[in-house]
Amino acid sequence: MKRRGLSTLNIAVSLVVVVAAAAPLMSGCVPGEIRAVPREETPLVVNEELAAFIDAVYKEPYSYFFNNCVDKSLRIMAEAKRLGMKADLIGCIVIVPFKRWHNFPIVSPHFYTEIEGEKVDVALDPAREKIYCKNSEVRIIMPVNLSEIGRAFFQRTGLGSYLLREGCGGN
Image 1: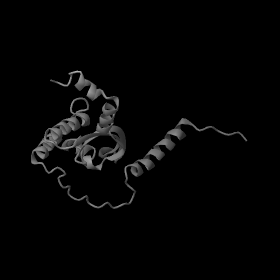
Image 2: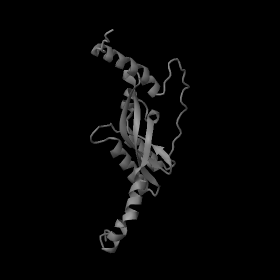
Image 3: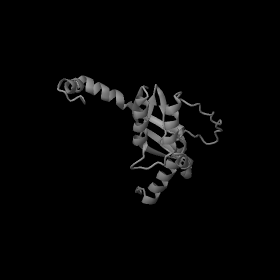
Image 4: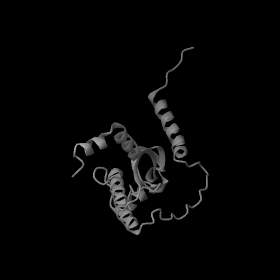
């Protein structure tokens, strides 16, 4: 008895079926599941000046090259540090459900800010949130505190104290 190999049509159909079955499960949606309405979010930042700055940055239109999650996060982190708050830059991988494609998951690198231990993620503006999902609904995978890594690196290498000893400390 001779075995027939899989045709490209069979492989393509199998791949489409697997992706169609896995996409809702990866985005956290189980077929037939009834989800509760999310509660209203309370403001995380108590400083009114910083909260107004974060709201202004959130409303700025998102751009892949100039006003992306890295740029917005760094500006918020700099403003928080200027106001004397502890702020860290967090890098991670996210799964973003694309609403226009029935919550098809998009995997990409992402950055956000933690201020006093609270997550502040304003990457997508309100217009983009209607297309993709809300900033609070993205699934975060492998968060890495890049600020802690930077502080540990400069402390271990002694580069900061070397610059101060040599008079390069901005005097």
